[in-house]
Amino acid sequence: MGGSLTDSNPDIAPTVWLCREPESDDPAIPQWLTAFEQATVAAFNGIRRQEYLCSRWLIRQALAGASGTAGAECRPVDGRPVCSDHPPGWHLSLSHSHGFSACAVSDTPGLGLDIEPRNRHPHWQKVVRRWFTPSEQAWLLDANDCEDFLKVWTLKEAWLKATGRGIAGNLQTLEITPDFQLIGDRSDESWMASSGQVGDFLLALVYHQSGHSLPSGSLLQTPGELFEASQPARPIAPVDWLFHNPVNIRKQE
Image (tube, rainbow, N blue to C red; front, side):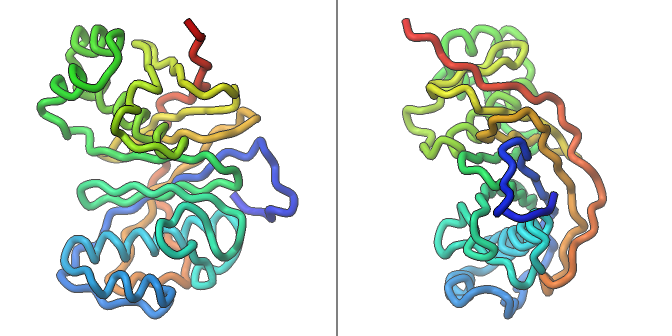
C-alpha cells in the first residue's frame, strides 16, 4: 500500500506486517532510533530489549511500506507508538507474543491488532467462564475447541485496542457468535474485524473503515542482529485471512 495522505481514501484497508524476532543475547542499539527510543531501550536487556528493537524496526518497515517514505526516515511518536511522527498522519497498533512481533498501519484512527500462538491457553475454559458473555460461554464450552477460543480472544483484544480501552470490565463489550458474527457496543456501523493466521500464530485486526476493502498482511524476513532499517525487508509469506466481518451494533434492550 502506498500513496499520500493528502489524498486519503476512506476505503483503503490497513496493512499488517509481521516478523519473528532474531535470536541475540545483547543486540546493539541502532543509530536510527530516536533519542527517546535509545534512552528507553538502554534500560532493557535480554528478551525485553530484543522485543523493543524488533517492534521499532517493524514500525519503520510498516510506515515505509504504507507511505513510500524511506524506512530510516520513518519514526513513531515518542512514548506509546499509536501513531507516526514522520511521515505524519498514520495510525499504528503493535502486538508481541512468544518471539513474534506484528504492526498494523492505517491512515484512519481506530485500529487494533492482536496475535497469539495457536497452542496457547491450555486452561482457556477458566477464562471463558470468568470473562465472556453467557452466550459465548455456552457455545465455546460446548464446542470445546481451543482454536475457536483463541479466535474470539484475539478479536476481543483487538477490539479493545481499537476502541482505546483496557481488558478490565470491557471484554463483554464485543460479543461473538458461533459463526463469528460480531456485536459491539459502538453506535456507528463502520467497524470491521478480520481474523487470520500465519505459520503457527493467529491474528486479529479491528479497524474503522467506511468502505469494504480487505486488509493485506505479510510475514517479513527475520531482521538481522543490526536491525537495518534503511533497506526494505523481504516478504516471505502472506497472511492467510480466515474471515472479514463487520462489527454490528448491539441493540438496546
